[in-house]
Image (cartoon, rainbow, N blue to C red):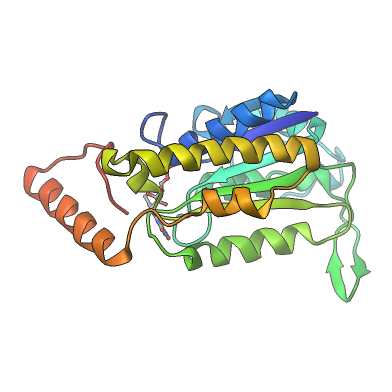
Length: 246
Ligand SMILES: Cc1cc2nc3c(=O)[nH]c(=O)nc-3n(C[C@H](O)[C@H](O)[C@H](O)COP(=O)(O)O)c2cc1C
């Protein structure tokens, strides 16, 4: 099984909770025998879609841009059995990098219109990978993922597409705090277990999901801790990315 794990966080390893969670998920997938590759989009050049529709007319299936999306990422996405979209919620949905990636998958669909179960859609040009969404929020409440979830569900409910699993880890910034070391270890172990289950069964059990999403911190305590951290950072003029907070 081929897996492409895409990291759309703007932050690099050591700071990024998307990185932390994605690494565990992929480790579990590899342990279960999958051939899994992690690609950090921040290290790639992916230009915005121009909306020219050349990929639908003059060169069907091929974008006009000569960049890493056309030459590497789209071919790798199309060859994969599973794609993992790893993104923090930025303004309640996804990072701009992930949005650009999704828009640039336009060559994989055809221009024609079809209606399925009352909904209009463009049919696929070729097989596309089944998807997993993995997101890590600063805020401790689960409803911060609702816009991202409905966006991904809407894309993936059209024919030929499959959204396998949604993994949402609230209060992810607190995972760097040594005070929550044991819970963090269990969450990362459970994320690796989720990777294994995905490769073996194409889904994640409710027990594993409960461990991944277990509460880390009481919201009131979170608020006091995070506000104190930001006040300290403001007074010190610190931009230390390792520090805590949402
Ligand atoms: C521009 C921007 C927008 C953000 N919007 C949200 C948001 O809507 N909800 C939330 O819980 N966290 C939000 N955050 C916080 C990040 O999602 C959170 O810190 C996440 O853990 C970062 O993931 P990373 O460590 O992989 O970069 C935002 C951060 C930035 C920089």
